Length: 354
Image (tube, helix red, strand yellow):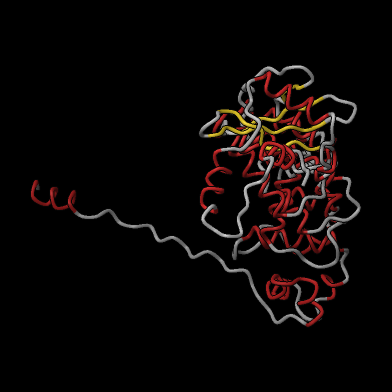
């Protein structure tokens, strides 16, 4: 008995046969059905045989609901009958296909156009609606590309209505990457503050400028507090505002400032001047350039007043080490001429003159 009992214990337990998953019926669709139902057409033809009149003549919202049901069936038979999809009151039919469907789906189904979407796009629509996005719920027309763009965003950005309903997919993915980077490097609170700020942007240019500012860390302290009429620009916001006032490319200098290699000052004269200083290998901080609005040159007497303020602040005004090295490299050439008034030439060049 013990031998047989041991044998029985060692024997593999009997397996229970799993019935194969029933496959949804397919049929041969007509050209019109292929046009309306897209990749769902063969399975729709299996439910509504030719000429598929019940499906083809049904309202677009019913056809979309049927495609959602087919997409969710994943090749198995539907859990609802064709009659439920096309004849049951729409609210009840949605509840049968999608128990707990997000608010707004019923209205959205009538605004998806006449042609079936892809199964992935339907799922993105359901996800976006679940975030209570009013821009989608109240839209007069909803396109797959718009939904794909929104679905590319993290849920907090969708709920914050970033970009409204106007972002394309590439823009949305870029914002998602920036948001994720902020969240990873500085934490959820910083990401939430960025999302709140972005939610107030109604113009794409402002939105992406804000995202750029939030992505980069705060600027380091200015090397000098300022002297006379020279005042340092100490934040990214001040740099951006100055770029708008002076109508120049000042924003592109932010990476240099972040590396501690440059600083920006504004000279508050009758005609304000934007002044950049850079860290020089020989002289420490040195004047890089100074320009008025639209990169216009700085005339006298403002030029001399700015030079005086810079020197009082401890900034070198004159030939930089990089420029001096270039001159040494060129000095052996016959065409190279040393200016008669080197100081005047150097200062004029820094201020936009000849």
